[in-house]
Image 1 (cartoon, rainbow, N blue to C red):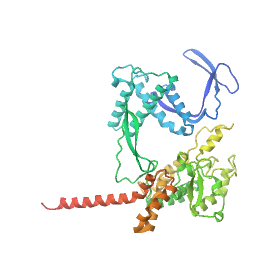
Image 2: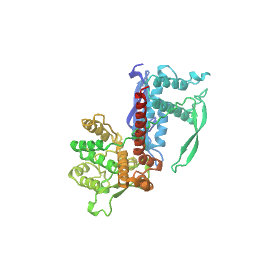
Image 3: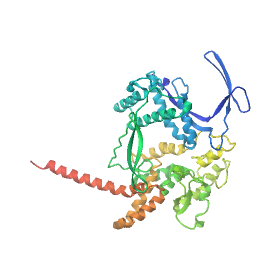
Image 4: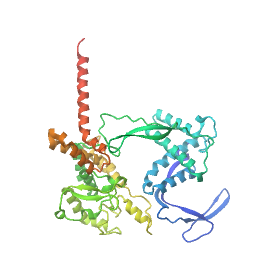
Length: 477
């Protein structure tokens, strides 16, 4: 099967839910074509959104077969997921890609997705797909984590079909066998808990092994704090590139630990006052629902702690001709609620959830593509990294790594200030860092406090034992 004949995820710039109509009407969309020698003509009427139901989505994924025909059942599941969590539409892309991979497998073997008539379970589609994924992993064609996710997506897809009566899917034989397992974990307060979860005999378990010498910190992903040399090279590169917006975005993350969505949704009003009128430093900027500044998981009642030097840079930019010229291209203009960072065309780099909802509930047409920080990531990949690599050849980073860099810089400074007495300040340092980085669990904060010492002790132990082995090997018999 050529790549052109394979199923794939297809993205619609704008998806609008409609209903079939026999006659034309205001706003109705005509459908007129020939199929199989038959003339087909009807109209589709857009479904109006309500307070409880979204009917329009941007960058909406579909699953189409090798002929470009939508896979109806898969598309209906994606629609169900989109309406359940309309603000997380971006998360459906990987789901659609996983379903497309499953459909490609089925089509290659001429299997029907809903045919579970076989009495022998190992020749049913789901079991065959599990074996196929294992073969790809063993051949080095697929990461085990990807295989695990793809199988999990297929299981979730069939669960939706079986529990949704309107899908009318009742397999002749079970797609898998369920069983309960019990998982031990620690809650946000550090107490041990046990949760019962369902698993299946077709699930692919991803055995995670932690690298004891890893330089990353698990904080919403594997984040790598940049070394001092890397930070210097990064800042020099940003200065050489001379882009005001991208430089300030980097400085804000490095000096506050804010995530991308928070930095890119800062508003002009947050830095409009001159620094001489700020009563206390660092300056606190409230973030979260109701502020227009996005936070991960819509965490509420948190503050961004901005040092004076950074605030003055942001203020100077906010009142600069460059920033005003960009705001002039927007409908908000000089409204203090306008975004601090705007592109040359006057668009935000990242559209806040609050603004997406406001547009949806108004007569303003939805944008055909989501604004979610892609220009920043492109600037990092195409401009910053290649420039830094001239000095540090293997240098790479993601914007989110700047958050971890802030955390480690703060810990290193506190350890330096406290010296041998850092142990006495541990509780205070833990509490302060937890607030600065908006950690839900103090266990995440502990990873920063323990990271540097953990690596140092491991390196000392490894080097010490290696030296001992060298002595043994070199010792004459």
